[in-house]
Amino acid sequence: MLSHENILETLQMIREECLDIRTITMGISLFDCQSDDEKRLADKIYDKIMKNARDLVKTGNEIEKMYGIPIVNKRVSVTPIALVAGGVSPDGCVRIAKTLDRAAKDLGINFIGGYTALVQKGFNDSGRTLVSTIPQALAETERVCSSVNVASTKAGINMDAVARMGKIIKEAAFLTKDSGSIGCAKLVVFANAPEDNPFMAGAFHGIGEPETVINVGVSGPGVVASAIKKAGNCNLAELAELIKKTAFKITRMGQLVAQEASGRLGVPFGIVDLSLAPTPAVGDSVARILEHMGLEQCGCAGTTACLAMLNDAVKKGGVMASSSVGGLSGAFIPVSEDEGMIAAVRAGSLSLEKLEAMTAVCSVGLDMIAVPGDTSAEIISGIIADEISIGVVNTKTTAVRIIPAYGYDVGDTLNFGGLLGEAPVMPVNTKSPSVFINRGGHIPAPIHSLKN
Image (cartoon, rainbow, N blue to C red):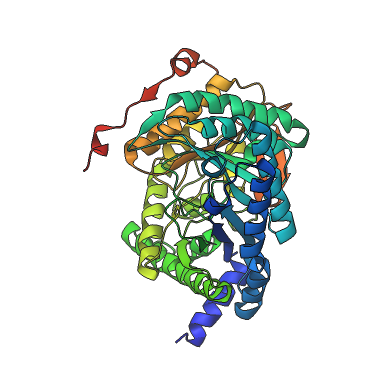
């Protein structure tokens, strides 16, 4: 039973501390849509999505009104398209992307994820075809998100795929250069991609998932920052305990919404992803949490240690609140989507190299990073290889969402608006890794992957 104090506390979190449900994401399997006829395949995909998700937005809105909890996004993820598009031509893949975009528009959702290939151990024909069409697909759609898993701890790193993705990212940036190279903001390169992630742009419906599922992503950087600020001069053990308790409350709310949505839609409840996902709004920043913990500015010495402690405490609090925690679950550090990160980059406190170090202890990776438009494909592939290696060696998910912004240079600002925010263009080391990248082949899995 909720006490008056619990209710008032939750209302304060919502009204003053930017607490929200970041997304309700319905995962939908497309395996039964396969067809040798490309038009028939696209039509079956559209019909399957519309049949299952037709009430998603309405249900989310009803739950918002019922509980007074903001639900920012209602989204859909589908089976990786490379797995259901075997034998489909490049034009057929683009047709599917446009079909996904049409379904998303008709449903009233902002993003649909799953234009995806899993190539960590090598390219099959459908994976190679889909990856080659990603730039065109993202340029010719508005709401489609794409991801490519190029590595895993069990498989090692497919360096042919890493090299290819540097070129794909450059092409996507070029094709969408008139809109700030936004195609790259909808494309993620993964290591150890989770199959139950509700957050875009990396969401897809994994092959081990049920026919349909509801996954919920919660958020609450502002709530955590406020709690730390109110705690005053406590020691680090007390601070960790405070973060755990706050994460518990946030996750409980996510569990409530997930179960309500699951029941109303008649779809199994999957997981709550308890990631601290920031927005560009003031007061909703992971960077500001770190500064409330005692840093002069995010990026200074001690930043990685603060982030490691924060991430651990968030996970510990979350798993006490729900037995169905999944997805990524931790702290996101997307530069363009975090007001404090943006400020730290502009002040020169936060560099690309420091961000890479921070990704070793948090949820994802180098996220929403803008770099000069003339950055070479080989340098982008090198950045990907570095970040993906962190994930493989540490048996964790890491990812890269990087935007070579055509027409922009260091110090310029790339403005996307909305949740995608604005990204200061960051300098990169221009010494070339091209000989290493162009060797191709496979970086073997680390020895600790042999656990059977």
